Image 1 (cartoon, rainbow, N blue to C red):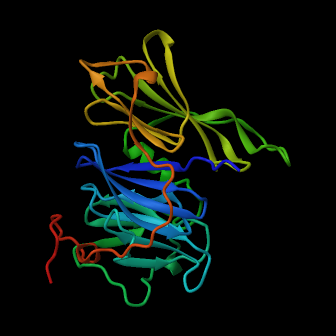
Image 2: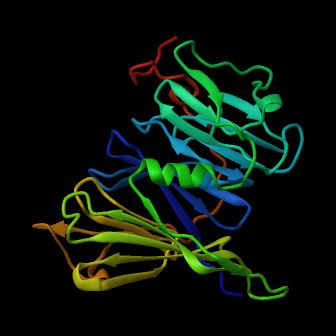
Length: 303
């Protein structure tokens, strides 16, 4: 039996050249990887035997704290939202959730978190606390409801993506290979940071729940002048780097298409930065510094 490629999803920090990669595969195992975008180096962190809902997660602006929603459907928590120091998942703060609705949230700023929990789910688990400089509030009026939306869509908007098309109908056929297809696809676009008049990155969400495949069916393409499109095809994630490079994941690999002199080459000339296939679960303890809150300014707090 041929193993399917792992699925990769990335969060980029807003104020630092850092990112985290959620490497999922098999479906109930997730590895967190820290990515230094300046050097394109990677640091493997901890695995979770369970599910991390990566589209409900967020990075602090400096990339040194991760807010994530996870579930293993076992006692005592079933599911929970936590803050950790990437690439580790060891919780500095943990809020029990108990179900698959809502969860996760946003770093509104370094010192303010919007937690996507209902009012009765805002209490920390016993034994956890957070520093006085950090404030935690609800994620809007309907906090704690929805699934990947609204956290995912709100994060896309914050990052400069623009919703350009929303479906007027769906195709929901029992027993079909894809559980639900959008008609037309949900479409988001993000202009190039340096050449907005030349390039636009487009994400098309075709549907959800492909049998034996990804939950979200997503395609990306780069739109050029006069309607020309460079198709990336099925891909779990894509975005622009601050320097204008195209970054994307596909079939368990991470790619970079460099923007040289303000020009992007063909998609097939993209450089593969890393192949995350073939990795297996490995138990790993977090180091001491990953168990300490950073200071309000981002430095490690000493005991």
